[in-house]
Length: 371
Image (cartoon, rainbow, N blue to C red; front, side):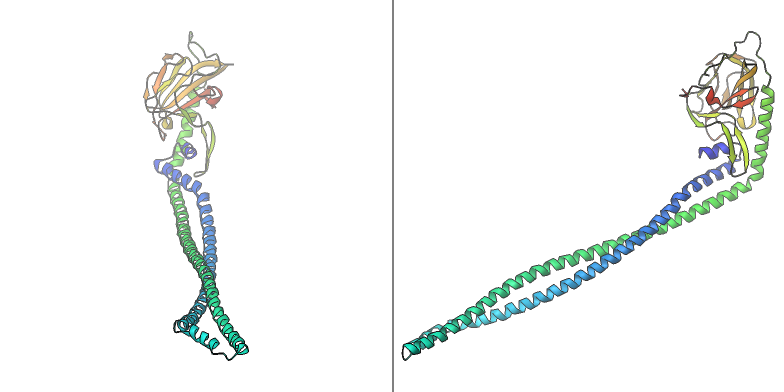
């Protein structure tokens, strides 16, 4: 944004606004494109995870069905064994044990008794086997019941995971659609900004030519100026920081990508609040204090010659002058107030150092800390 504003210092308000929108949209495009690609990847991953989870859920349901079937079979065996044991218990209650005793009593001799005792023993063992079968069937049924419970919980968990994965896939799909819409909106914003910038081409280039002409007039006016006798001359060294603030734009040549012209930002911009005092960077005599096109209210102070070359400092975009042409000022004296006059996008001081009117980078002469 700072680069766009500095490049378009002399542009119309419409062109400046269009450039700002274009700069923001252009800067946002790579991130928006990356977001679209990333969101599409997330959708693919989420759908794959949802499909995998659904397959796991289906397998868990099948496993539960098989285990539930085995539990049902085990329960049937329990029911059958219980019926047999119930029959034994009913027979015992109805006197079958007395009948067995009578069989033994009615024997005709020891051999017959032994035969009859063997038969009774076989009957007792058969009944005991039926009881043991019931016990084993119950144990197997409990085991299958536990397995069925675990399988059911596993199936429920798998189904819940599948639902969550599907929800995540839908959410990712929605985010991908929004990302694509944002990218389209950025492209539309850039196209609209370019149309506005192009529509302002003639007006901006006219201002650009006027700014170049103004710069040439300033250089000519400052070139060869000499201090009056008795004036204290600048002896070199660091200049005084002219205003308390922070650097918002550097000195240097810039290429305007919108209107394809090179222009020199002839000073350094120091952002500060409107009305902040501006101090003379060195002692000298005011040789210019008036309106200067895009510079707005513009003051220049001559500080004498260095190695035979005239040295001047200039102060642009002021809200008010506090000195007049011909006045001698001391180092640190307040000569004006910070403003945003001329081609300015906000309150700041445009500070220049010039040699015979030709601008050079002020950062070479100011304290490194800019304080």
